[in-house]
Length: 617
Ligand code: PEP
Ligand code: MG
Image 1: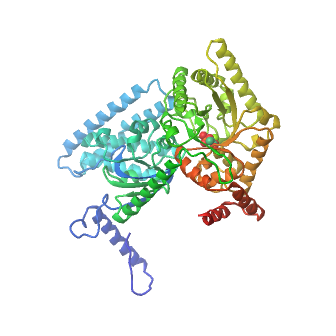
Image 2 (image 1 turned 90 degrees about the vertical axis):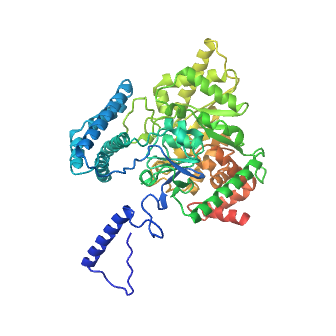
Image 3 (image 1 turned 120 degrees about the vertical axis):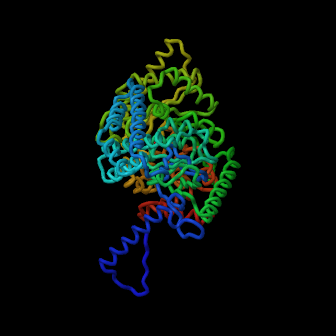
């Protein structure tokens, strides 16, 4: 940016502005070429300056480390070439190698998913495109090296990509970008690193990454920054399970960062500092130290039962879904697993797991839990959770579409297989099963009927039956809160899926950044609705829990407890902060604060509760 100051306030003429724009452009080009670098220079060249980039927080926590590019950028050091004939040969050899590579990928995927094949076919089409080749040959003829010609084509494709809004075309242009990267790697021999070269405290940087690749890196990563990604993506699910700070939607990160760069990741604020200044590093380290202190404090109350000042006992349990979650059961102080999202194990694979594989997985979960209760939620697929190996149905509104128990009841084979696997894994131990997204009593009845039938079949086959069996429902649509009382009498327990319930209560898509944060969970109407559900459950003595993200936010958890929720299920890392606040609070007081705010006609009780909390400390 060129900043111009004048002593007197004045208007610049169009000619002056044009002249300044030319000056700015020339200076920018010179800076890019490193003209101001060196002893005492005021400017540093590209890729050496510190940069602050903003994105969306996807997994909280802070991390300091060094950049590890999932697909490293190639640096072209020889932009100009003397011998165009030689360069044309180099390009042609590299393109041949690229085509062989793409053909191999196609061959491997022949039996795979149709969509994946289509993508690869398009990819091959680009690799064989005459226009692409001709443009690069023309660039070489004008004096560029083969690498520079590829890069030139790539930057033009990127410029086109910025203007295209159609998602299909954007993806195709992204393919082209990817092909150019491969070609550059072949030409320069750069980027053939493997994870043995990981820097100390690696922070992974990628445009996007699949859950499989991420699991391969595993806990060796200190943080993750994605240029794309989304809060509900599979990579996010895995990062959460591994408790690795993650920031998504960080524009430009893959072009700005170089392998080994010093980087700070703030997963709470969704901020990334690349090549940070010393003062920023100092402040950041202070923050990490404070968080570590808080963790120590939480560890000291790990075994303390959660009893509030007024003597109310609250059960804090954890959400899980991957094997990677299991060690947290002991470390976090969770009293059990309140929500085991079984679909996660289906999502991170590229083919449907076999029943025997499921039995082994569920057995391991139950073994790890010992005598702690595990609530297995049956497959919750559809909406944002799409299984790559299941036929994808295009739906206008997937969140309101064919998902969860609706798929289960229409595809009974899969539901039965999962129920059988659960019964066999329990092998005579207690078993708790929960059906997601139940919108009306009849759906629960049918699901329960399937459970009973599966039990009968397993008995006939000579398998051990669970010592006790509880069958519950998730309350995620407002309709279920108004079900006949008989539903509340028949169901063994209910868990409020606050993430979905809130999106349907306010008609605000939980995945849509434009509206996702628009309505406060401490909105009076929402809390009143929760209170009604508590009352209905009390009438029939039906155990009730809350397992959405809000259960893990201390202030929200406090208000939910004040509304009468006695079991909160959350991410393991949230148990310490939530317990710490609950131990210090009197729920009667909080209830009064909420009720007063309600009588004053306030929209959200948050300001009143926050004020009360400030006065407490
Ligand atoms: C919920 O909706 O609150 C819930 C716990 O389920 P999920 O987030 O997996 O949809
Ligand atoms: Mg849900």
